Image (cartoon, rainbow, N blue to C red; front, side, top):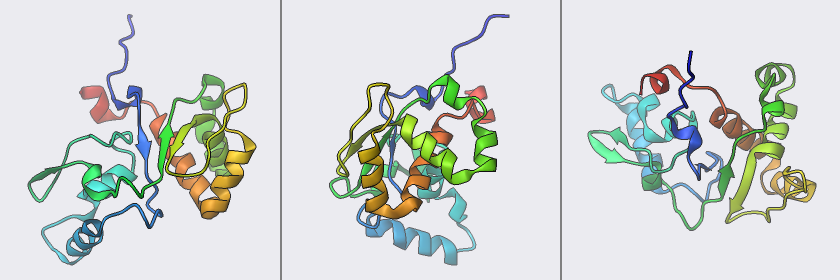
Length: 175
């Protein structure tokens, strides 16, 4: 049986993550639309582009087309590009990926840190990014991330790296 190469956004050159907790990043449009969805009987808040992006269903492709109230949008329609801190995601080495789901259930915080250490490929408009010789994120950069947003930010980024590195979802397999 010949294996087909995966066709999904996980192979994008530049997946970008913006934390939901980055208060400077999000435009007022986001808050007003989420509030409207919460009050509406016709709109499902889980179908909002921000929620789809936050769940990683776009594999953090900021140009992924989505629909909201019949309008074509991308996550960039909700982000202040100059104020947002962009976390650039990458593929995890195979030896880190093996057993990662189990490690997440055993020690969530440690697994998030491991994902950041091995899967973060750059930072725009944020802390200085440095790597070690073996490709890991330098401890100084990790410390700056924690200082910038507490351990919650490490968890946000770590989860994004983890989701970005998951296998194909059912809809992706059918694409």
